[in-house]
Image (cartoon, rainbow, N blue to C red; front, side):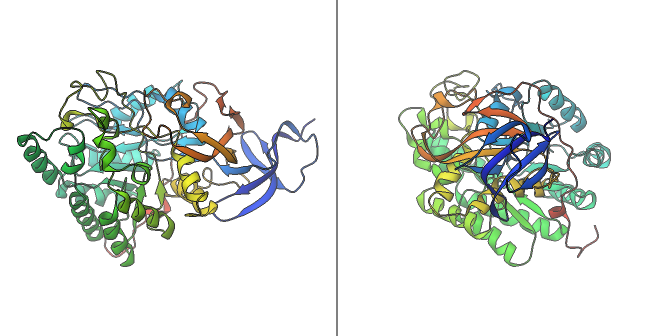
Length: 477
């Protein structure tokens, strides 16, 4: 009789702290043994990982699946295609968003998202909340109860008319996060600056996709970043600023961190591999790269790389927001010549996130392998209350693993990807290093780069109150 359900042999294992060689024994979806030379035949199923890296499965803590939009557009990926794509890219846990519509119940939004995920998700998932209407009912009853129920992170917006909160509302929500032990995520852009610039550009007839980038300059991101840091300092609460695009916001975050404030930051592949010039493609093609904040330029790419290397950033997420290009419910919602303000925001990236960072980060010596694991797996688990069940390779942890061939060279094409989007902004980019086998709770779900799992096997994860969300204790609000 086999001692283990699965044994992974001869691999080089990496966590956020160490790189070492060992065999892994897995029972009932959990790692129960780590040793040199687990005996032959000990596993009912065995994988020889010689010459390969065995890494914790990635956690994509910022992605959007099957999210209602309110403008008639429709996201291309539901919880089936989105999580299949995630798994094939080496990601074994996703945290998408349950969006509260203004005037609606936050609890009802969560119930709706459970319905959307049920029977579809192929890897494990948790939910962030999006708080767009912090009413007395939401702040007094729904949000505190949801945090107790395991939804311990939420996002608030400083832009988009149907989502944004004013400063007083932000203070109320941050005070609740402090009191109830939740992680507050911030989309930091100055809404009035963007609206003013957009109106001016439209009056001048400058409505092509490229002008989306000009309507959202770095100063709009910098100002909002500084303002929300100040609000968080006032309340004495940690916050996490998401999808940071460039140098000016980074400088604000580094300044705050240098003052001892608990300010965390996330960036995304589009700020390393795209620039504003990608919105300047012929015709309407630039709409494929419309996202917010927009990509900047090569100098800002360097600043983002520096932040990944020197610790300014704690997270590297995809911000996967999938809209098809040639689709009346996608990027062409208002036609192939629509003004940029009417083009759905977002780009796909859940499957390419890890390979891009591995190839250009680890492969080019910009970051270490342990830093790669930290940014893409361990830190998301810590910041969102899933560690050490997720995010590491340790006795008792879920057996969520990605076995990488570090030498495999791949040319990214949309045809090879598993999302339901009709393009990738990284078409033709060559990478070295790719996950060839992916294990989710001890079950092989990707083999030889192809999906072999089953719809609905993913489990919902209740999150603990994150330790990094604890205040410094200087103020009792």
